[in-house]
Image 1 (tube, one colour):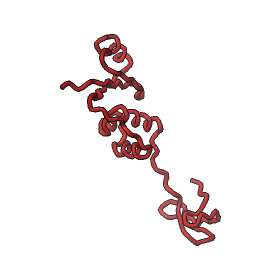
Image 2 (spheres, one colour):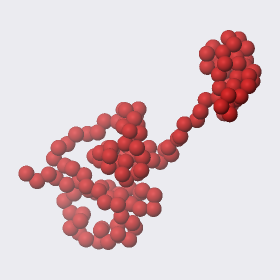
Image 3 (cartoon, helix red, strand yellow):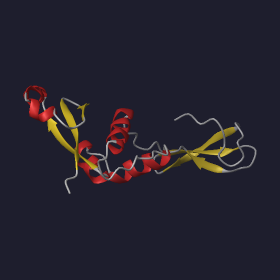
Image 4 (cartoon, helix red, strand yellow):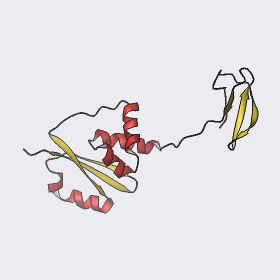
Length: 139
């Protein structure tokens, strides 16, 4: 990683000052502050961030999203907070979901009973498809 400024005084004048724990250490010429290169954290692909937020808006819980995408539910919670996502609340409907491959999806849509009386969303998940269907709670 290329350093641009000192993290203490924001000066761009620094020199190498040894190696600690296999990481290069630097010393600022202006404030004599010693610092090392910042670690790069793991970055989750934006595709999974978008899918997780989409599934959250469709009504799935954090744990369900974790099981489907293989991403920590804590990460999903943090993304919802970061992007200030608000889920519309409607207690009369609840989502059910199925993971299908292309041939199973075609068979599902051939039956008119599967389509009648409910909203359906199909989204791609890698080589499979996720089918989300809203059903009205029966009283």
